[in-house]
Length: 480
Ligand SMILES: [Zn+2]
Image 1: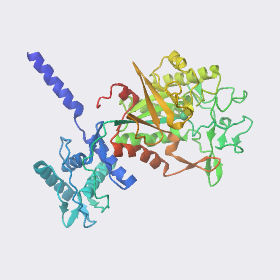
Image 2: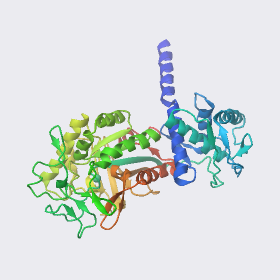
Image 3: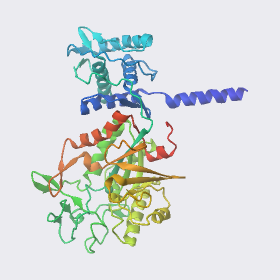
Image 4: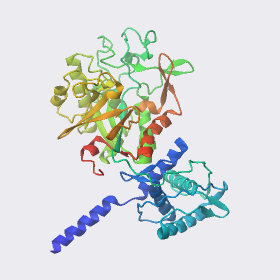
């Protein structure tokens, strides 16, 4: 009997621990909330806390608890009633006064569990939505600077007057997978490139740069290009070319090129996405980008650290960003095997998935991947599974395979028809560059990162989709 009691208590403690909300969880939810407003000039309908989507009234209560200095956080919706109140004055407030007002507000919520008409601090009457934006910004600043500022300016935003304080989650749309394909800066093989030229500009859709212009980097016994690249005539389907970077109308070659996305974008992804929001990302890595990343001290161990915390799922993407549909059986075998071996060498672990470059799979592709024996995840238009689906970008599916197979769509835009899971694809170079021109080239841009993150945050805030990884998803959708 005693034993049962102990076991029961232990289970209780463990389950409480599992759902305990940390200060850092609230900071991440606040980062999401305040960035969402900065990106879209309207509040999201949901914020994410501990792998669950909460409505904005619950976020309000949570942020107020944080500012008040409360240490146990409750998630509870407040009864939503919109008073259409507009903040009277863009005043500047002392943090101490904001903390005091938050404590009072917390007591008010405990008694009534509904919104007040407005928040009054000194001579400022602040609308609930502006106060929520203010406190999320305060928490977000503290996340960045490790301390509160002394004063904060109240902004008077004209949000839609009917805020969805208590949005209901559509049960059919629950998850989102953010995926990053790690590869050289925009590898291209859709055009006909001949190895005799260094730069292809004529009769192509993208300005192609021949890999022979780059240094051959090595890591252990693995190198970014085959030894005979300068002798044998490799096709651009076998070893991908990259897209030119232009600055002031001229093609330039930064020292990080063509792996600037992988070596520089990775830090942005760590700090400004994964750390900032706590959202996990699935990476598919080409072997040559693993070699490029390995040239940066500590980057490999940092990747592993995130992986061990469940924030990154790692997958394969061939050695040379090879279009495995367009090459010989032997080259296909080589590029997949080398990609797999350098992955094992760098991370000493198994990849959880494979994604085909250009989403192109050869016919009868399944046996190849089973032969390699690693967990299968591939994507392409899938005529075998969906006969109507042929060469249409909207028809790309991913195969999750574990004990059973499940198919999910890879989304290019928000897909309201999708059941359950949306998967978005981006690339590290997209955090640094935008594409321009005809033929296309890359251009460094301060908006690049913003464009990727905006696209990724929108469905989370709009539909309450909970970010997940294939590993987590296959584990049985614990929050379903
Ligand atoms: Zn790719």
